[in-house]
Image (cartoon, rainbow, N blue to C red; front, side, top):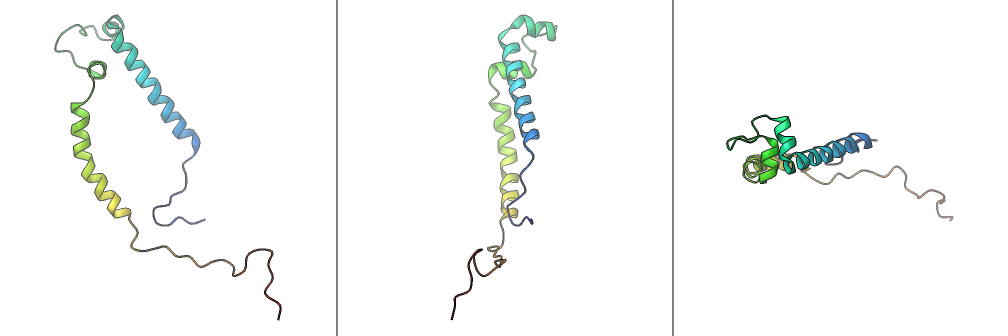
Amino acid sequence: MTTTGLHRPALPEWPRRLLAAGAAVLVLTLSVLAASPQLHEWLHPDAGQPEHECAITLFHHGVTQPVAGIALAVMPLLLVARAALVPAGPDLVAPRYRLSPGRAPPGW
């Protein structure tokens, strides 16, 4: 089986599931640490300081500014990459057979 144009073979199921489970565990861990100042101070002794900044505090306050900057920086690159993947024309493939399976040519 060949791949042409924008069609790529599907990735195996386990890496996607592992990535999704890892992301869910990360969000759950950040939520618990952001909700409990005692656990956050257990992890970082200086967590009570006003100038303390880490992934937990960013998650607690809502990560809008850094993510917006990253999105604005990455979006043009994604558009250029998407434009490079557009095929020049239709990918027409000749059929492997002229008649559908189980059909004979017309009788004369």
